[in-house]
Length: 269
Image (cartoon, rainbow, N blue to C red; front, side, top):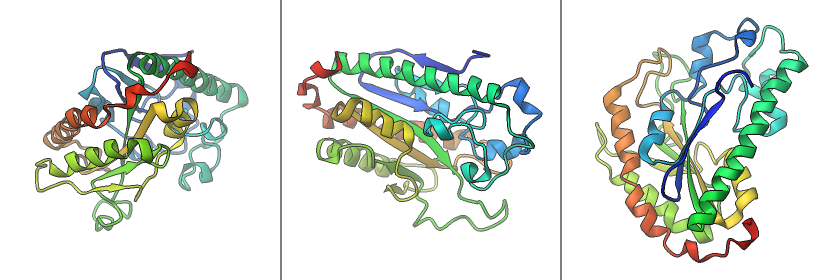
């Protein structure tokens, strides 16, 4: 498998933080095929979200751009082939050949096999796993000088929870949202919505399918208020503040998840 495709960081605790779209790296043999510029591709990626995963010891960080293989899509859609696969963008001058696509899909298959073992071990140890599936999203799609998208429909943080059982995990989700809203972010409190802009992608759906109620996979989408989505310039202080906001949710998270460990994990053995 060419290059480093992803990293797993083992560590204590039932919480895993994941960055699937933080990387901009693509295989050398694909670069000349792209119709999109490097900047255009980066606009649809989630730069710096790998930094946010460091709030916990147990982490998963993808090292390939979603434009090589999108780990948050179903396998059949993991390599973008048409504009419909990529928000109307013409990704390729000419599509990669089937051999190149199979290399990318081999990364996909290996990733999911490794994630299954990684999360299974955590569940067997703690009785459950909570996954922070961290992403970011654009809110100035009309152009760098246009008005930002309506904040009512584009909260600072969107929690995607459609793939978890709220009957069991509702206290965890509500506590997470409340802690984020209480954080003293530069310029004012953070707006936090649930299933407004995004509801959670294939990765969190797959986790629920594999592990059921032993898992709580929350897709956490940060609006790109910590960077310029057109120039990609970072505001380090705002990113640091978002890191602190996410870090502040951990004590409450563990309190609200008490009792989950009592569920039997026999079926996972």
